[in-house]
Length: 354
Ligand SMILES: Cc1cc2nc3c(=O)[nH]c(=O)nc-3n(C[C@H](O)[C@H](O)[C@H](O)COP(=O)(O)O)c2cc1C
Image (cartoon, rainbow, N blue to C red; front, top):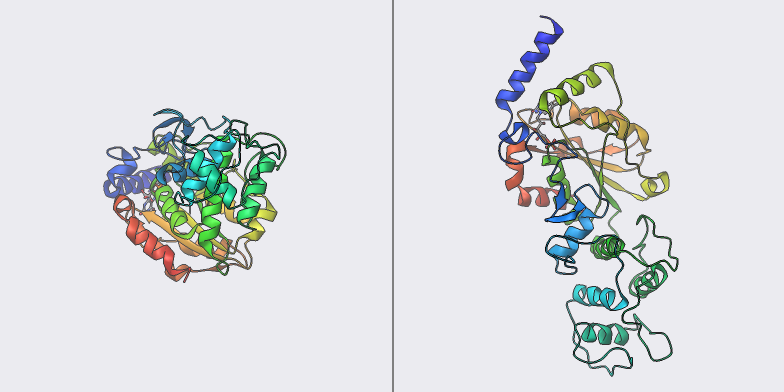
């Protein structure tokens, strides 16, 4: 049988057994990494692949930050000192404190009054020393760092793009990320290792699983993105994937984690779809790029029939040199079941942090 006919045969087999989501109907329609929903939660200015998309989603879901309108979040806009304190107050579940308000620019009865009163009582904010709080001034990176240092010694602002602790104003995206990091670092406890949830996903199943794992473990999300998109067309994607696998091609990636940051992770949940009974080649690139020795790597994948992962899970073990890869405990889900599997995914993820 010629290679072309053989490829066509496998494709037909895959297509026949593939869930609707992978080829069109329903959810991520022949989608791709770039296409997995274009925006977060209906905000037209928050692309789902933006570094802050998860943080915006976290803040919105937890009632900490709303949009600037029904459809916009304004990630690059600044926020005032009153706004930041109000976000932190909401995160602390809106405590009401008996504390004499000292700031001349914080009148009673404003939306931020209770929040500032609480923050002052906790010595999170001290004001300017001239009797003012600076209600409407943009919060600076330095000030935000200081506030969080009073809360915790955890590296809440580490890794936030363009955040250097200077006197530049904080953007709403940066604030959302800091707030989410704070919550997650607190959640991780002191003994649990630092967790990374890295994943490659073409039509969205792996991305959904990764988000749940991150929610459960407090792990930081990292999406493996090939520089050259696989496009939206299934056949084009399948042909290229096959060619890359057959020829050992490692596609270049467009997102990277610096070595120092990677060194801090102890546990890496690694997600992918089964592609041609193996690991998609962008994941090979990822595994070969980093030194994962000493880390625990926990695979999770979705498939459309190859429920044992075919060669993919052992491939992870082969490529993650020096890491402990928990091949026997990998999570396998059929792609069409992913949407209904939040509890299963979270229960599975929880097992490793006990
Ligand atoms: C190029 C390609 C090859 C695939 N090969 C397989 C396979 O060998 N075995 C299998 O069970 N599913 C295969 N599938 C189906 C995917 O593994 C499945 O749809 C998965 O849930 C997609 O995950 P994602 O949405 O995170 O990309 C393949 C899909 C594509 C696009």
